[in-house]
Amino acid sequence: MQQRVLASQLAERAGETVRLQGWVHRRRRLASVTFVVLRDRSGLAQVVIRDPETVELVEKLGEETVVEVVGKALANPQAPGGVEVVDPTLTPLTEPAETPPIELWRPSVNAALPTLLDNAPTTLRHPKLKAGFEIASAAVQGFRATLSGLDFTEINTPKLVESATESGANVFAVDYFGKPAYLAQSPQFYKQHLVGVFERVFEVGPVFRAEPHNTGRHLAEYVSLDAELGFVQDHCEVMDVCEQVVVGMVSAVRERAAAAVELLGVELPSTGGGKIPVVDFTEVLRMVGAPPDEPDLAPAHERAIGEWAQAEHGSDFVFVEGYPTANRAFYTHPRPEEPRWSRSFDLIFRGVELVSGAQRLHRYEDYVAVLRERGLPLESYASYIDAFRFGIPPHGGFAFGLERFVSRLTGAENIREVTLFPRDMQRLSP
Ligand code: AMO
Image (cartoon, rainbow, N blue to C red; front, side, top):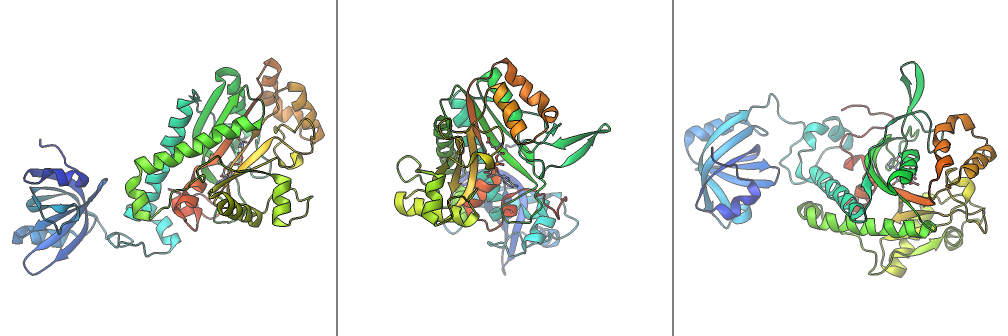
């Protein structure tokens, strides 16, 4: 059988008979001719139909019919891409039972978010909705490529776990053969253990947070891009790897998702031509006029420091380091000289936290001490901290939220717009 040609390849096929497959994206009937815009994974192609029988067939079939089209590719400067298919035979492959819930052919998406999400398997076909996920796919490839290039090993760790890693409150409990278990909030414990095996590891996978608030930037399930590396001096080496990863992700989006970037009018972020600026947590509080004993940065503080990085350094990114130890996860390494502050950092992207990371504790006795100090039950963390009895090197790591990254990149108002099938307090389907 003749090989399938994609819409994007049509420009090179003028003069040939081609076979296209895709969806009837749009029909336009003029007096003497009917135009069908066919959509496939690569884009749109114009098909010109004059034969009355085929015109009648197209009329009857409607939008979103899956079709095969075999016809002559001819140059026409007016056609999108400069080449169209004329006088084809058109064979329906799947006839839809109903018209789609939104008009997919309209250039802009004109439906409310709940409608889009309720009908996601179909509404995601809209080129502008799909584009965000092409960007996400490219970003993940950039994450993988950068870390593989730095000799990291890709891992996959369990999502059914026996203890909470980040905090006890935001955890989903499940019944595990009659015993209590949880959905993993992060691959944190496993990635640290696996530093003892591979030295450098990364994971791309789902994590679960029972987020009790309905915000535009929190999901109950998101894709976490995690990395962890051994033999570090302090968190600065971790930040350095994190920066290389960010640069790699942005280049991958530029190279692999160029069409999606253009369609959405995305302005790709810049680090301002140099290293990403780094500001100390206490300095940020001073800059934004917050009280010096504030335990964390509020969203307004993150926005302000993001604006500062843009104005002073032309950078869409800024690292904030040295958060108060008491307010970070118990596994965070304090600054040895002033333990009130930690060797931790966040990466703020366009005014929103995108990454959290830190150097970790690596000695067994330090874990026992910190759990006691924080009143956390040792027995709940036994299998986690036991591994530190057997020699884990000084290490650190970080995690990105993929949907956070894409939503800041595309300027999505709500993170759900760039989540394939979002999970939140109200939504478990589709
Ligand atoms: P943290 O809990 O800060 O750190 O999460 C890391 C990054 O994940 C994203 N994120 C979320 N995205 C969508 N919905 C949510 N509910 C949500 N919560 C977090 C953010 C955030 O910066 N174990 C540590 C990481 C580490 O130290 O390696 C952790 O999970 O972009």
